[in-house]
Image 1: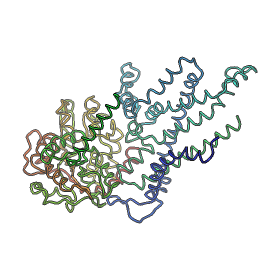
Image 2: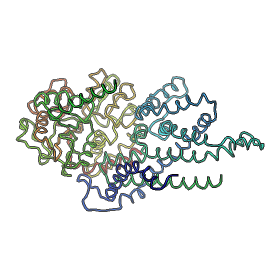
Image 3: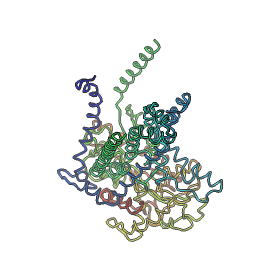
Image 4: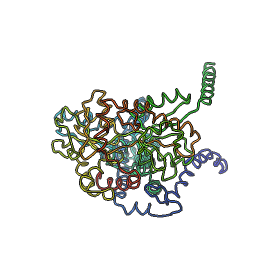
Length: 283
Length: 341
């Protein structure tokens, strides 16, 4: 049994790193988010305002970007779940000798740099990219499909990048479902489908939720892929924040948007952990 | 055993490296990348290192990244000399981040055009480029003469313009705005005019060299772009020509700034002096296809046709960098909301 004192010691190294390199810098950004930026002159000294936050709510462009970001997070999570679950099930319950090769296949894309992978998608999805060229050569379409700088491009790119996270979480969860319980259900006359829907699926719910939270939070905060596949016309929150900071040099506005994004992520995590508790209570 | 040996060798090499680094002074220069950065290395860094014995390490940044870095490290910058577009140099100067240039330390200072000096010598313009029209002469038989030629229906779906995050983006917006009767305080006419053009553009480019592959694959035949990038691509065999619109191209002025609080002021001034020298400027102009500010430089015929020079230079619109710095967030926000949406 681990005593609280020992527990503290165990988490101390990570807690210190997080506090020093994450929490403190984030808190240092807080005053900036209430500051005022004067274009051409810089940050106004001694001026405090809530405008950076109120603008996020009142400006319909910001609202559009926020909804787009949340929608993207939801769609990517669903896509990862729908595609990831069968694969995870196969890895967890399929033939033993398939397990290692399949897991390697899942992990393999993660060994490539994010920028390289996104560039790969550009080569595939661009107007004169491989996909469009092939379809035009086959006579399926006349003019190139718009696969980039829109929701389609971001969905494809982000789903590909975050699918491994979902699969790995699900594999662990499905493997944790006791086979005895499934066998018991089968013995009592359940069909295979019924066993799956009423035993395996609910018992793997914690894994589904953990994987979904992970993918959702990673998606709404992704920067590199949206910058490359979304371009200047299809902005999400992360790229908007980058622009405010690096292009407009408006740090107060960028900080306020960052906090808004952080609170959205925390809100989602809080909501889903409540959901998990309720599900677990039912199971 | 093998590991120990390797470790020992590495340590020795590292130690030698540190000793060497301690002996030679190091100057950190922030520069744009691409053909510009290559030309900085060849024409300025190499002779500078030879003359001073110092080493130069180059950090590749665009203007806004450099400005952000200067603000983040205010008064204690790890950069010794930086290249930035004039609007950003004006911005950082207003924030008190620029060291006043000491003209007495710049032996070539007297040779450059007087207009090159920024307010209170807070920066110095090092070269002259522009946003102009670039076209593929194999397809476009009559060279374009006006910014409005981009609206010509024969180029529908075959042209490209820049996003406002790049210099050519806001410069073309302002050029169009001026033609349509707007002013720097009122960009409504420009925004209204550019909206359909941006919608019909094959893409809004965010990196200058993105345009090269568009021309290469024949996706575009005309662009609002940079003559120097076009010339560099043409030198590699691409079919490209530069046209200066009759309403005037828009001037781009890359400047140099010495960040405030620098500890290597003398060395930094020497580097600025190298960039302003006639030899350095001539080499840079010929290589990067950018106009010079040193009056002692005569450009070759080939370069003179591409860079703003003589008649075309007289016609170039140079916009007050202070006004640009003050307005660019507003222009960008309007662009995001009304043009690119």
